[in-house]
Image (cartoon, rainbow, N blue to C red; front, side, top):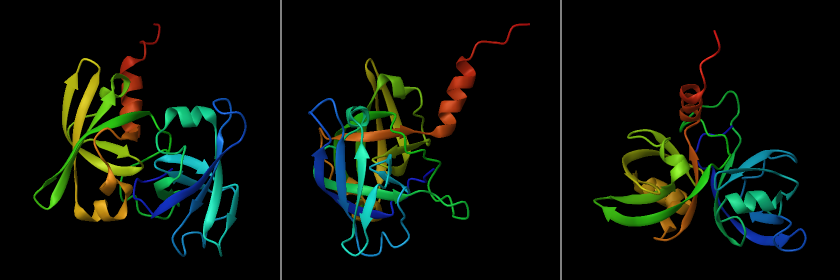
Length: 209
């Protein structure tokens, strides 16, 4: 379980195929800031751009760890198949504050950035979400974008999904990869966990009498 509060900005420095392209996943090596790995052990869960991964090797002195990501996960996510910046979050401990919202680290779908521009001291970010996720997005509801917990400011429904708007403060821009997004970029989305359960309850057939 995660909170959507990014622990560190890091970088994928290697993305090596585990077999023939398209049929196998990749082994990623991630370079981290100083001190990030001090309390990390083999087998720990770390979210990369919102996708929960398992640490399979690490070198604290060299400040890197590695994970293996399956072909299926690569197909269902964005930004994890090549070198580049990523948001990191360590799994939530039971005695820690829940600063964002409940995030499982399971990407529900991939959205596309449609707008990113300054509005006063902040920035407005608009993203289109696929149709299957539209019903989970609501005004003032929660959404994780590339692993970052954010609040939805507006939702506009369309024939093939919806466009939602969020406001990014300077702190978020400086401490996550969202400060560098551009229109057309694909991003990982995870809808609110509670919304998923509510949707299931409402759609479930009534028990027989």
